Image (cartoon, rainbow, N blue to C red; front, side, top):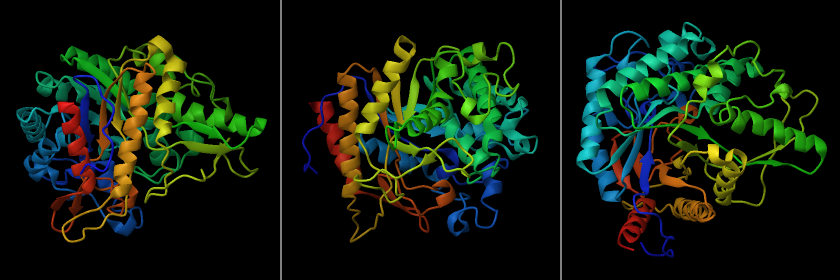
Length: 451
């Protein structure tokens, strides 16, 4: 498909790829010694997931990964970001490794490398072992130490072939949806009482950085979901609401890593020690130097001062006048450029090289005569890749772009109703059908290689 102008040039060695996560694609929920995660538990709560759907089978990637890697190879990508399931490696979240679980990731990594695709494993993508949640999950400091032990087990097995490692995926989203609002696993609705979860996730990240480096990992990253925050007006109350939201969504998981301190969280009733959660030496562990920053970008956020009974120092308000995805998220490609330039302005020389580790959109896709005509996704990708090129031209050091996602998967509380993939998956038959966006991106990547 050649109905779009060529993309701007990108540096040699730039990583083009796709992203996924274990619970969303693997299936095989109870095979080969895998233990129970919080998502295995959560999906069995009545009405927790749309249609009471589960990821028990998902995309059956555990069995079909050779077919899926062939799709990646045909697409022309050079990177695949996946996550390792903690309960596949350690069924109860601690103790000795499960040999069958590590063997699966061994096979996956080798199959990727055989096709010239660089593995980008993520160690935690929201599927905490239920056994650890039963001991208070991320509210418990001990979970951070268990995570470091798990990281060491995976790296000891794979670091001889895997160069790029990501510790956590979107810790803010896991904090907010899983522990503050309760709409994701583990389903706790603690509101501002969930803030200690942030520190324990960050401590886990810092401890894992050390464990990964000890095992020979060459490049260590974290993947944060970032958003431009727009005040609803110039009124001081709206500006204060925007500052409060920016501190929670963006800075809470960036400042400790890059600046060695927490942002001002007074709007949430929390001081710099997060209510006594932070101990001496913790911030030095968290601020261990990184080799890269993963940025997951989907949309900007517009906020206003809250009403008197709102309970938080901000409230979301709609962004009008822009396209919207099937998820009803605003589509604003320039927001990616804004995020990247904002990172450089805020963190300066402390900012490591950036990798776009997720960026994609949901579309109400349909297979018609063997074809999925997803023009909205093509426009999304084209606009965001061009915005990325503008940020790079302005001096931001970006090393890769990994779109979410290769194939339609289990989209958390939405079940299978939201489709983000370049490949359509019929979840009854597991038939894979590449969409128009797949062929569009394949053509663009071929042009870039030969340009």
